[in-house]
Length: 262
Image 1 (cartoon, rainbow, N blue to C red):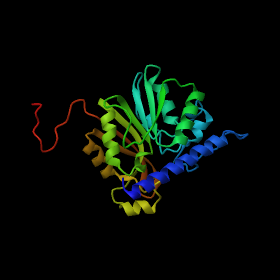
Image 2: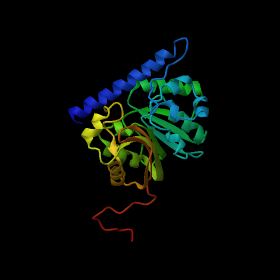
Image 3: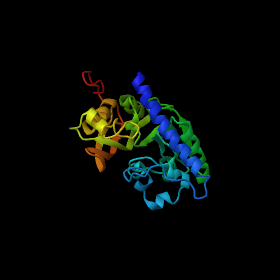
C-alpha cells in the first residue's frame, strides 16, 4: 500500500473511531447519545422510523451511511449476510432480524472503537446470530463461498483499493450469491479532481467511483446483473446509489481464453 493510501486509511479510521467514542461517551450522559451525523443525506434518517425504534439508541446514533442496504438486499430466513464496514452495527442487527435464528449476520470493521460499540449494541439488542470481525474490506477474514449476501453502507467509496474490495466480495460469496450496497457514486462527467473539490475522502465524496467505473469494477471481478440506481444527491453531480449484482452460479469464461465448458 502506498504512503498516500496509508494516510487516507488512517484519516478514515480516526474519523470513525472519534464517532464511536462520541456515541459511547454520549450514552453516559443524562439524555442519551447524540446523533453523530446531522447531514440529512447521511445517517439514521434514511431508515424507517419503525426500524430505528426497535434498536438501541447507540445503534441509531452511530449510523453514518448514505442509504439503507438491508431494505434492498431482500434478505431471507436462513441466509448468511456480511456487512462491509459495519460501524456501530445498525445494518448487521437489522439483517440478523431478517435472516432469523437459522441465519447469521457478520459485521466487518477495521476500527477497534466501532467494533467495541457494535458488540455492546448487539448485547443490548439481545442478538445471538451476529458476529463482528476485525479486518479490512480489501482482505475479508472469511473463507470463500460462505456468504449468501454482501451488504455495505457508504463504505466502499472509502477504500483506496476498490478492485481488491470487489474481488474479495466475489470470493466470499457462494455461487448465486448477491450484493445489495448503498454507496456514493459520481456522474461520469466528473473527473477525480472535481470529485475531490466537492468533499474529502473521509466524508465519502473524494473517493467515489463514477457510474461507469463502478460497473466496470464489478464486471472485472466477475459480477453479472449489475444495477446502479441513484436515490438522492449528496453533492453537485454526486449521488447516493443502490448497487445490486450477482455472482454467477456457474464459472464465466475468461475473455481471450477458450470456453472448455462446451
